[in-house]
Length: 334
Image 1 (cartoon, rainbow, N blue to C red):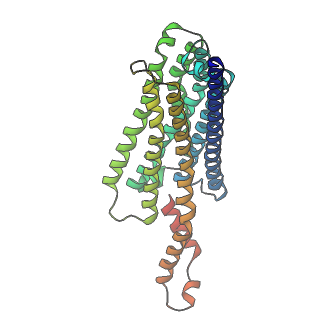
Image 2: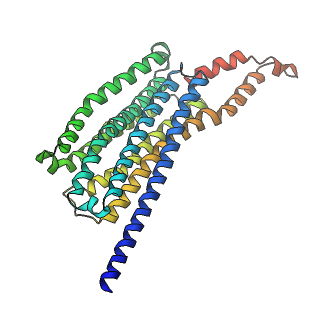
Image 3: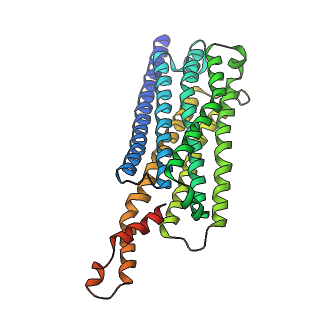
């Protein structure tokens, strides 16, 4: 009776964990799919509305593309690790050998494109913040020298720097896969250093740019510029917050901390994955909130402004020039 009860308990626990893994997989895949769809729609919307020639929109497109790549490769890493857990016992994958080594090998190899894409996404966030700082604080300089073509060149430079810097992490993952003893013993520190590095290249520059922009901007700002600044701050905060659970998980898995239970590891992994995908899903929501939902209100205010300067009467509205409104919008949207 005791052996039978023990086997039933083990089987029920394994089935429950399998259900949790399936639920986590579907939930992460669904949110990641929405994030990917939203970012791609943002790029397509900018292209269809012929806004790519405006530097701000070109920077948003580059950021959306890098976010899409980050979502895709992070999801592929999640799927690969989940398949490994399904193929073996969950507990042995998270705590025991030799399946622990196989699980870590799969995680290490799939981490290479994930880290490269996330690094590119975070660097494009800094690039977007720098572009908005230049446009708001130095409007004449940006109007003369900052073009969409140069934004694309800057984006290419960002990707080149990303690949060069990521080569060190790529080398570490390959050495871990080949079971180099030093990398096997110290890979947790490498993971922790890589996550902290992402914070280091993102948080200080973004804070400095926002503070400098806040101190240098003129007192009278257009409503659109205020909303654009709000969107930039919101994207920066959401992106940084989305990485906090991953950082906490990396710290908890480091050798310096006390070991935690497999169930707790699974919980932290789920929270880290969902937070990351939710953060990237919120980016296109902010894009469309600023550039689509507010468009009608902006058109209405501009229409009233131009009409109020004309002669009173029914003919006033007819005298409002669409070309003038379009030109004013172009200046505001830059």
